Length: 295
Image 1 (cartoon, rainbow, N blue to C red):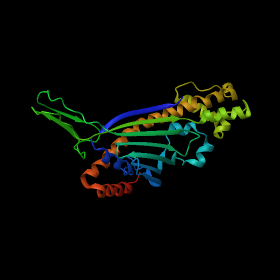
Image 2 (image 1 turned 180 degrees about the horizontal axis):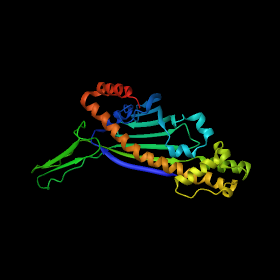
Image 3 (image 1 turned 90 degrees about the horizontal axis):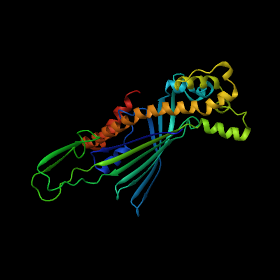
Image 4 (image 1 turned 60 degrees about the vertical axis):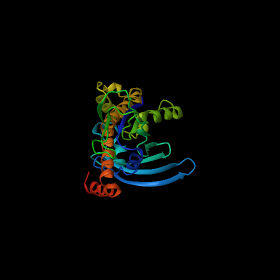
C-alpha cells in the first residue's frame, strides 16, 4: 500500500521572495544534512516567462533503526555504515512562472529505489489579496502564518478599516501545498520475479538474503506475532516479503516524513528572514555558518 502525506500552509512573504528562497534554502539550520547542491540544467523561455531548473542534491542521513532491522545484512554492508549512516542523491525539477506567480517543484530519490521510492511535490502560488468589505465597522485583524513576525512584508498582516471607502488589501502572501508519496519497491520486484521464474522466487532472492530476519523484524514493527519455525518456509516468507516488510518500511518512512516536513518549512522561514535582514549577502553568510556546524 502506498503511503501519502500532504500539507498546506501560507508564507507571509511575496512570491518573488519565496521562489528565490527556495533556490537558496540549502543549507540552513534545519537541513545541515544536505552536503551539496549542483545545477544540472537551467532554461528560460522568453515567450512563457518560465524558468525550468534541474538540480541534484546530495543528502546524508541515518536510516531509522527499525528500517535497518528490516533490511538484509548483505544490502546494508555495501550501502550503509554500521550505524545506519547513508547518503543519497535527490533529483529535483522546478518550473517558475514569474508572470503568473506560481512555481511547481518535484523531487525523487535516485538511490535505495529498490527499498523505497519517495516522490515529493511542492506547489507555490501567489495568494489572492483578501479584500475588506467597506461596510465593516472599524476593526483591526491580525493573522499570523508561516514565516513568523519578521517577513519581508511583515510576519503579521494587519487590516484596518475605519470609515474608508473602498477595499484594503493585506501584504502579499504565498500559498504552499506539499505532497509526499512513499512507495516500497520490494513487493513489486517480488511480483516481477515470480512472473519470470514462477513461485520459486521469494523476498529473500529479491532483497539479497537475510529474509527470515527481515520477516521477523517486520512482524515486530507491525505489532504482529513472531513466525513459528514451521512458518518460516517459502510460502509464509514470500507473503511477508511482499506485504508486511513493504508496509512496515512505508509506515516508518511516513512517520519520519511527518517530522521532517515541518523542519523544512522552518528552514525556508529562516532563509526568508535572512533575505529580509541582509539580502543575498546575509543568506550566503548564513550558509557558511551552517556548513561549519557538524551534523
